[in-house]
Length: 170
Image (cartoon, one colour):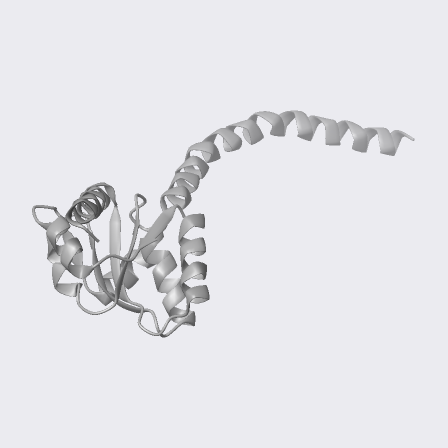
């Protein structure tokens, strides 16, 4: 890799560190190519990405970034998982590491906050952005459905009383 290519990689990594809601660092030593492809596919489905980069280049890209504290995790065979959603990458890596013990979570960063492996697990347990939006929409819609039910209830009661009277008359 020549100097221009290295500079391009450092720039790309810098953009990743700057724009990602969460970055998870893990060791992947011993994983097969198909394991890595499976991890990439799951991450892509969740809206994130997986990147393997030279640790030295990643450390250079981390200089001056809010998540610079993860530079300590960049030793050995490391893989970076990241997503704009502050929970997605952590969820996917946490779930994948349960099934594949060769993927070992070292830590990560959520904005300026450094995460240890327990912190990554805690972030993975949080609801995702879509789940929060669905929950909020449900809370907003509940009063409207209650009002609609209350408005329709008297008419329903009158109809049932009339049908009862009609049955008795017949």
